[in-house]
View 1 (tube, protein in one colour):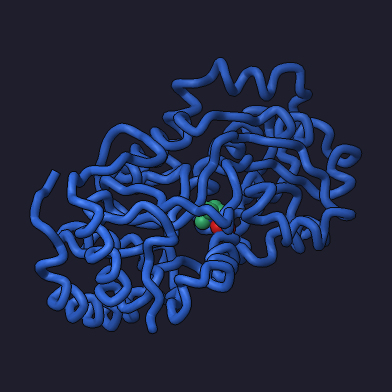
View 2 (cartoon, helix red, strand yellow):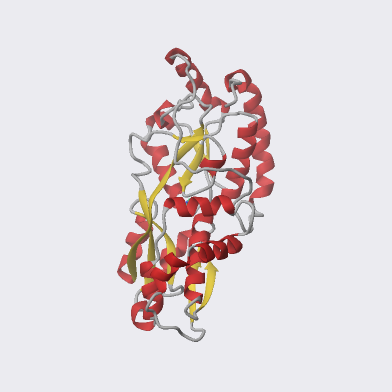
Length: 328
Ligand code: PBE
């Protein structure tokens, strides 16, 4: 663990963050495939306290956090569920008065995190698991006493109404598809070195027994088309690619169609896509789901224990969202 105290460089950090923000603007539009790159190992949701400083000093350091980060939470895509949850946090926590969420893209957030972390500068990001960032960097979620981000979630598979009748085999395979947080996060770490399609093929090759449980007894078809919604996060790109390969083993012709996160549920309800493996419930996508649930079939969890929240590097001496000082 690095020992240098960022407080000593708070002023410099403030300046370089401003420059960083400007520089990042140029990056934001260019997001293509993967969220980011890097390396890391292990996988864990959060880490404990690192610093043994006195509580007096803690108050002083937390007072500086807001100033040092320019009262800015580094968010991700505007249409993400966590973006809405962060807006809720901004209105529910009195101590966040004067704070703002800067939305752009997951890639831009990761790039700011990478830079801040390597300079040991403070940064407050919108975070979630499954993702590789907790394995790659020492990060911790801030406590959320007002529960703006909810408890641990399920990532559920949802399909359009009528799929069961039209393509019972697809319905069955999507209904059975399930893996673990550990499966997903080790996949995502692997995908820092290779592309997601390659890792998906390797995962399926190494886990054919699990795939068999999903596809056993399903009748093979000859190239029937299936369309799954694809959202820009690696966790869902991973699960959709694994499901695609499972469906292909039964002869389906699967297209992963990029869909703006804000309209995934609408696309399912309209039947524009057949299914999605990317519904974070009950909180993150709860309001999107509510709007369209009459025309969507919920097939239940494909992953349990997903997490969302505000996160900071463990070198920062704060533990709770309530430790962030208001701008005034
Ligand atoms: N996420 C990752 C997404 C879903 C997958 C938590 C950033 C969101 O909509 O918030």
